Image (cartoon, rainbow, N blue to C red; front, side, top):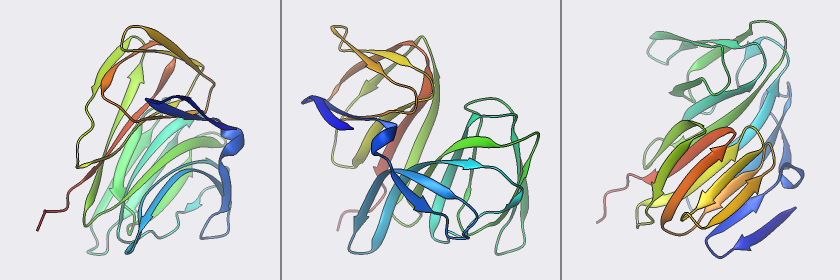
Length: 203
């Protein structure tokens, strides 16, 4: 269920996420947030389970950040269009990897299935700053023209204090979209802070 708890934020729970099949047909994604414009998809946030080794879907033109949420870990091997090779080893919850969506990426599970959070943004005009948060953790939200999204994904049941006066309890796997300036304090739990910014040069 999605609900506006306050004019400063919107809280969405996992039951309201949209189920979407993977492009390669090997699984499904829970789509949490999608932003599109006249050029197509600009940024997308989703949650998924990886149950088998295999090659990721091709998302050429998008930059990806993958965050390990649960499980025994995953190895990612990337080969770019130019033939460059890179690897990531995610072992602990909130470990993350950043890579081009157009890379040929092979996922190898360490010991059983994992769950991950995916943040994808259009390479040409958008970037994502993704931060792993462990209580206690504080951050300032400043809304300005180039900021497209400020949000927090709860990887556990979390308590967040807003502007030192209001406590918000987030269920595990819920998503808090922050709409106003303010100070946020993560008092209990762990999660991921996501900031999506426009890099488009004003004409």
